[in-house]
Picture 1 (cartoon, rainbow, N blue to C red):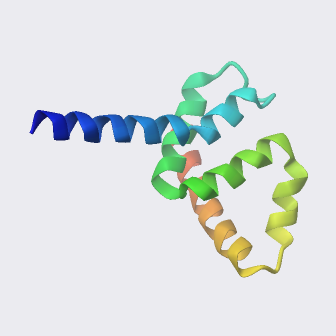
Picture 2: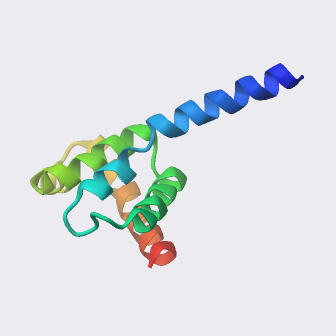
Length: 98
């Protein structure tokens, strides 16, 4: 039983370390640089509202803000669905991280 618990713990821990893309991008962003508490809160909101794939795409917006506009204006269905989730993430992050 203990081995199963430890194995599950390390799987969760590894997944968390890999899924930290929003926090990492936030920390590198000029407006939020040096505010790890805010960036951690934003990552927590992302973990609750976005898939890992969504988080990778959202993190790319920190590096390339024009990419966000491209995705927002895209007529591709997957981009439209992502943008709905991204807006919900933004609203949730704003309410819990302010």
